[in-house]
Image (cartoon, rainbow, N blue to C red; front, side):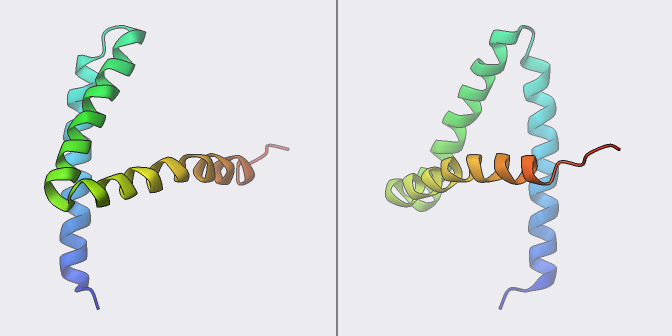
Length: 85
């Protein structure tokens, strides 16, 4: 069983890092083309962190799971999109 206090600390860490990295990334985006360049850099960094942490095989599984979740997430958002009447 996971320690709720540890999980809360981990969520707080993820949230903090996401805010910092997103601010840094947004500050690097000056043109529309920069979005893909910055995204590519973040993807490469993410790949390296996963490979260093869990190995290439499990990192590939993680990227596959993330890629598979893209359509599910979009479908979920589309299905639950509020309508105005």
